[in-house]
Length: 233
Image (cartoon, rainbow, N blue to C red; front, side, top):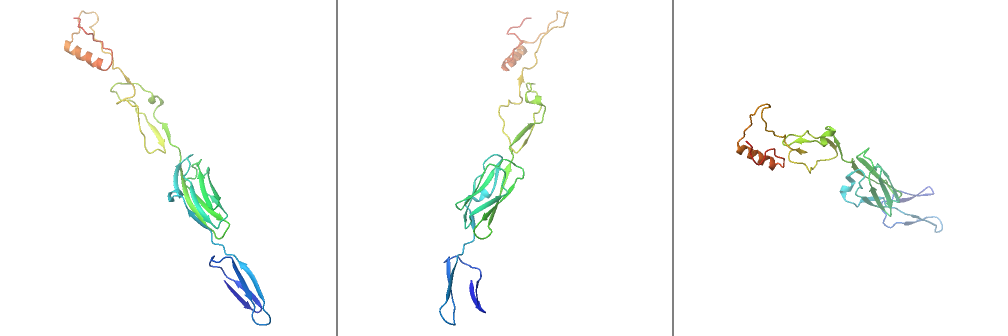
């Protein structure tokens, strides 16, 4: 800053470039003429506002599930006396107190995601802003797309089930548990009956070895065997 006298006018003007020594007490001393005449005053120079991120760098560009809390975003400030906030999703708020800006909360909507927010410092000197982004992901969904009956079906052993299908949103994969090997509900195989032709005395003769094999197979499946432990010929 400088002072100037011209045509009986003293002018002090300029832009201070430092805060060191503020407040500055100045004196104007007239020269020439008679007597000692002075004028005094004071100029206080306030530093420009500053804002500095104090949470992790990744917090200014984070992705969260709807209704889940974000990781708090924090800044320290100097010079400012407050802050305003814009662009935050519903459920997330910003606050300035004791030179600390805090953005926190749980987003309750995905409409407009990703949300680009801005922090504007108020009071003090200068226009200082900070920006960031919050992406809100919707909750996972799963919807049956095959027939309703496919979720509770009965099939014969070794026979294919009717495919059960779902569509999903949000998920990146799925795990499965409780499925049987190859099918959903296992039922016994069809009953085997040995009989003769009606109206005749003819009988169906099966070798003892084949009857024994059939009996063992059915018992191994936990099914009732129509084959007795003895042969009636």
